[in-house]
Length: 526
Image (cartoon, rainbow, N blue to C red; front, side, top):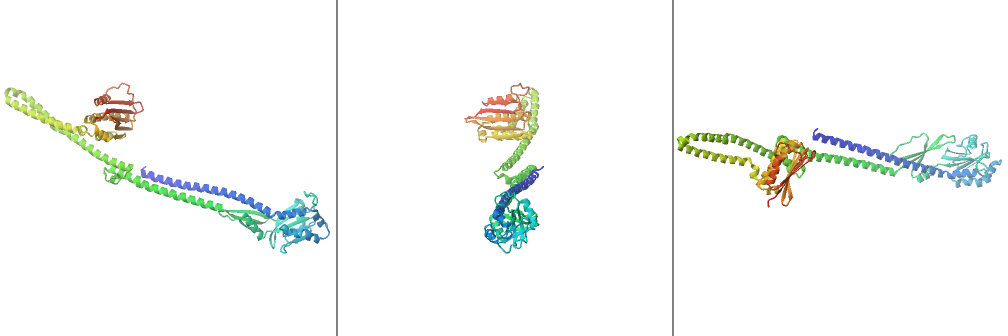
């Protein structure tokens, strides 16, 4: 799977995560809104029941007190209506108790007296049949129902008439008292004002609307026989729910916008600053051309450093290839030049013996010629030696180590080789120290590559203090026990001897499974 494919897969996962986050957020927001709605609905429902109870309390008090009254018993017991008594005790009480009508029935259910505060309220037309009402009151002692009148819906309360001392109403009814109060627009306006909601009376079979962020409360208004006559509908638009809904919408919008912008910015920046540079580096490595890296080398970033390292590796590879070609040419030159000359010198020396006895002058001339050829061979050999030891003659220890590391890296590509050379410190080292340290590094690296089986080797040169330098070669391989005897090989002994020749000391630390650390401490020239 390519890096671009993985990146695209990551984008898909981020988009899916954003969508899932939005769904989860909306779910919990809706859940929170429903909980708040239920709580507000419960509060409003209890408030509505309390308001209905309070609005009908005066009518209930009127009915209860006047039906539990000995004078009312005497009033019903009279053969004819005492209108003077009714005009003093019943008629004025309608206004006092906010009632609009009152009816007094005999024990057999026949109407005895009726009065109304408004002529629009019929005294008897909307009431249930007297006998049926009387039977219900004998059974239940009291009643509460609604009737429809030309003036509108009216609330009716009734109770049996008993003497004042019969507070439990256990005696036989002496009559029945009904009172009524209109639920007109004024009454509904009072309920709406107290509940801070819209209040209306609707038919029993009217549908229940569904509105967002609105609480709908319904109360059945029954007739005398228990059927639902009308329905009280209270509609409460909650500003709290509207605010919460608006806030939830903005939260979701902000999350979606921020998430989308973050994903787009992340995608754009990753393509611009990661994928595109990696593509340039990959193209450069594939073609061996440093052209694609030119725009990256100026960047002060890790990828810019990588581009510079790739360019440097190309240059070092070219130098190494040139060095290898030069050494191959030296090998051919040695075979075709110096060795052939030496063969010729040997043949000349073999022929000089007979000439010494027979032709001394020619022998002397042959000796001079052989001497000349030997001097030329010596000069040629010195030239070869100078060309084969660049580290010692150039005194560039850091460069020599990097060339060596590059050569080792080519031989062991699976091992990571790190170099950390203090350039200023390396420049202070004499030629002899550079040469000996290079031999030590070569031997330690060779041992680590061939025997440690590790994945990382680090070479460093740094100051130990003001008067000494510290060279370390460390690997994370399998290690060994330095105290055990070693069979064959003199590499470790040779490294120790070279360190002693430099006036320093070599320390070897290793444990099975813990890697190996070779440390050389040598004095710096004053």
